[in-house]
Length: 369
Picture (cartoon, rainbow, N blue to C red):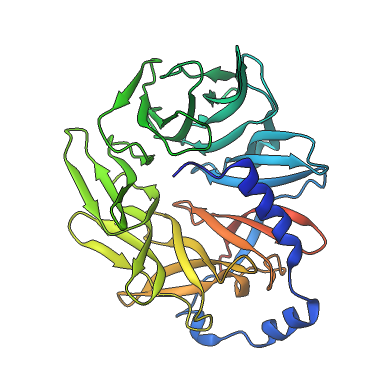
């Protein structure tokens, strides 16, 4: 499954403007269900905020230093740029074209602890126009084209990077088709095609690689270890692969729709609860920290989604709707918000639409009593 495309992001952004009326929002706020909050759920404050009216940003990932990567449209949709935002240094690194020249179609989709960001850009190669090439942005802001693993008319994307600087991605015959090979780039600049299913998604520091595999009538997730041992399990996506081997993502439960889910080799697949006050919402998990706090999103359809947090209370998973927990009313009802990552310090990356502000990226921090 490739990262969200330009058209996906545009459709998402345009859909944000269909938020429900303010009167309905007020009614929902008044009806906040106590059962959804769990035992002593944490409150959060806005630590960092990115809401430049000149851009429509979409966040994809954050590292332990609160550096955020993603892509943004200019407000008039004339330009597409990738970015790495370092809020602690008030620094925004933008990349609008490929290192060797090309169109304004760059996305940065992953970033490691050191600030190494990876993604892809659009280039023209001879008679082949609009093909994709994988790239990385070094911590100092310099852009570097990654070695291309295929022919001139083929496309490549980088989709994940671990804390040792090992990058994985895809090779495509066509930019918007399914990948035909999984690819790995080493820190010393070597590239190789991998002997595993092509749709790889995440890599951890041990070198384990997670992805998805389409079998007849069903989609599975897998984790392949460096020695070639492959574990297949009943999840449909992997959004994070932790260094301890835990896969974080989503699974389809029979008759119950989509659930946020975790997988470990010892315990198998574990489904996380869906919100009882929003029974028709499907959920997926995006990230987990060392304290076993999990963040994600629950959504009904294209109309509304909620940023959520799961934490354990007396050995049981409890879901917290972050709409009720963020001070200052940042997250609104009837619109869209997603919690994309949580650090070991408890900082949460949220991508949302805020009435009066528009497309907004925020880093939340727990409020200390």
